[in-house]
Image 1 (cartoon, helix red, strand yellow):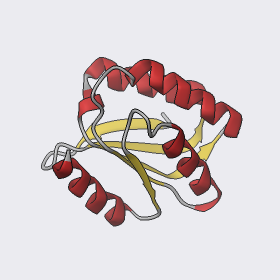
Image 2 (cartoon, one colour):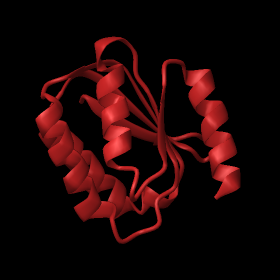
Image 3 (tube, one colour):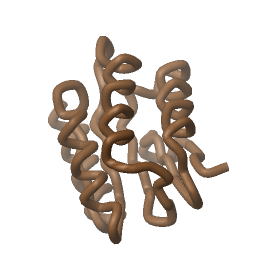
Image 4 (cartoon, one colour):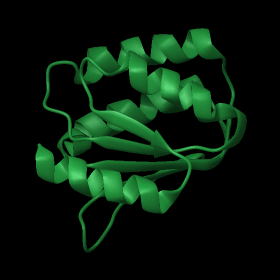
Length: 124
């Protein structure tokens, strides 16, 4: 399964790991599952370093619009995304496109993402 979620036992942060080829449909399923489980109010760290994104920028912007439909009327906790390589800028574009309804930042290391997420979670 390319997208897996688990809650960190000590911090309560939702850890989402992306691996292998990830499609836009799988992202949509993830968004719906997070909403249905009520995890939109939980800080999330998305580790996508092992993922290959199976779509381009145009579909990425459609995903941002879909996310707004799914989450636009609820309070979202901050999201930190860890991405490396050629997809880093795509992740930055997604964070920018979703900025009206979710606070998200993109990092190239897990420790940097964890530190930002802890600070952002306290500041809410």
